Length: 152
Image 1 (cartoon, rainbow, N blue to C red):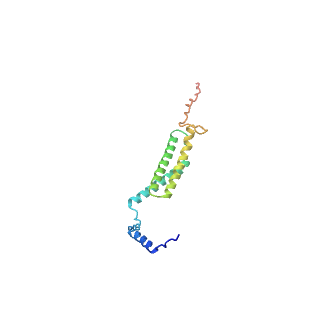
Image 2 (cartoon, rainbow, N blue to C red; image 1 turned 45 degrees about the vertical axis):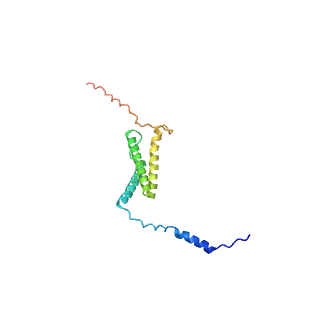
Image 3 (cartoon, one colour; image 1 turned 60 degrees about the horizontal axis):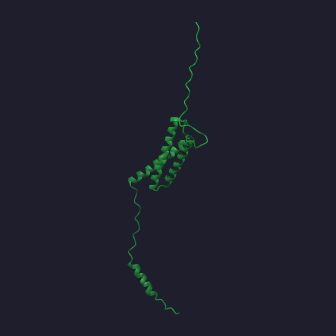
């Protein structure tokens, strides 16, 4: 079992020929171009939507009016829905423009606005132990004050 010695010079020259036949490597990528005016506008719009969502989400627990029923509840839930929509817009825009911080802040605004809206909706749909109503209870009409007869 004697093996013949390998001719390394011949094998290495064959490898060199195969390497030489390959196409030239691709040139290095060019330096990044400066952002255009449109790209700057979209980034600014991304931060606008994210900032508006954060401001609205932070303002929800500080809502100055009573939100227990009726039209005041509708306005509160409308503000929560607007905060959710602005958060979704900010998240989509920040995802497409690769803005990580804006994306995380948008997700936080979506989560917080969803929690605040859920706190008001669940008791009204019968899910929570305490049951609340969508409309305000009507107050009974006040009785007319009794007028004492005057005697002449």
